[in-house]
Image 1 (cartoon, rainbow, N blue to C red):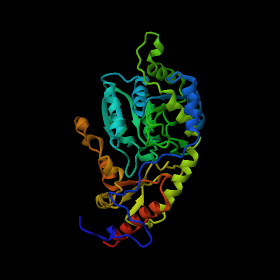
Image 2: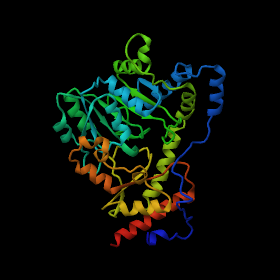
Image 3: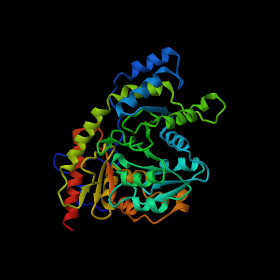
Image 4: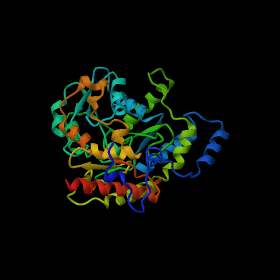
Length: 382
């Protein structure tokens, strides 16, 4: 690639390369996990039936302000079991936004159901309520919403359409621990919210997940299915979370607030280099909404490909490049379900995602801010 102004380091800013990249993963500092693990190991109770799992679930329910939290083995198992608990059966239809990545969509296929892809609103992540209304049929059994990248998806208008048709809304909040929509936590707005605790997430246990709900009947169905039908003859699967992972999660729940504050502060540093009306802006959010800054999402006035390529060459590939992000129906597995989604296409083409996790050093954060500022100036002069 030809050398450009973006490739020359700014004075006082450390240069990173593909061989020495900015670290995009974050591991929180230890906060009692080792002692908790030792206690669990000494107890000899390592399965999903251990007392620490119930303790972890109570802590999750308390933090999010819901009546029920159920820990499971992954975010994918949470989504699959939530769809089953919502009554999704083979041949049913499930609505989901075109912005959905593969882990959001594959549990629908696991149920034997048919994914029905809907567009999002312009420059946003919420499902377009008009498209939702147009695609609801007598076979629609559920809908899945998606606060992608930890940014709010205000699906309240779409939920009104779904509520009128008595269709449950399942939130895939796997990247959205602490994200708020109109002051409420993502994952608490529909029938159930599904979360992942993979090592890349804000609440990280290595692997794992959980579901939140205020619907007691739904919670009982979810628990029944994920715990082998309670071994009472009904069909179920073993999606329980092992006790050592629950022990890690229990210690780390208490650190979520501090992590959210640190991520917001780092995002503010990057936001400060953006110019009002300039060629790069943060992905817009509502006045009463707040991202958890799983990543910091920029939107370009035109295609973000050039800046994404420059960051990638420098050793900091945006998530859109790292994971080949594009609308769901571009994936071969979901190509048969393709539909016209111009807003999702535009969102994929114009956004890029950069790390703002608490593990970034000041020099790393300054380097990212410097790159954003200089590229924005370059775009604005064209």
